[in-house]
Amino acid sequence: MAKSSLQDQLLKAGLASKDKVRDLQREQQKSKKMARKHKLDQVDEAKVAAEKALREKAERDRKLNLEQKAKADEKAAQAQIKQLIEMNRLERDGADIPYNFTDGSKIKKLYVNRMMQTQLSKGLLAIVRLGEHYEVIPAVVAEKIQARDESYLAFRNEPDKSAPAEDDPYADYQVPDDLMW
Image (cartoon, rainbow, N blue to C red):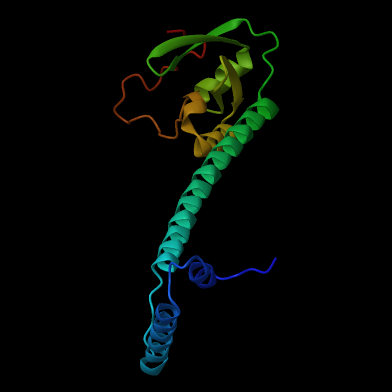
């Protein structure tokens, strides 16, 4: 069965005459000729709308990709922090000395040994959160963790690098290391 155009079908059905079809074809040819002659750009509204939709979709996709990348970077940083803590945490063997520290506005207690207590007081060690628990790690590692996410750092003393004042009446007296507050 041969495909026939809509014009042929309308002619066969008697809904259009040959004169009307011929006039319509001439009108279309004239408009095409005028467009070529005057080099008029015929604006295709559907094409413009499609291009606009493509640009908007590309912009949405770009924003979505940036959000997903940010989430992936955050997840990677969290994994790095967890790995740093697990690899560098110090074992608290023989930890029988309670060490009190502040975590935010709460006072917490962690059992450490004598050497850890001294190093925590001097700022050589730090205490970090790992889930619901606290771990003791070297201060160098704590700095790396703090650079990625400060919320993991629970407690860290700053090393005291200042000399005692000259007019300090208690300069000759040492504060004992085992002083508990």
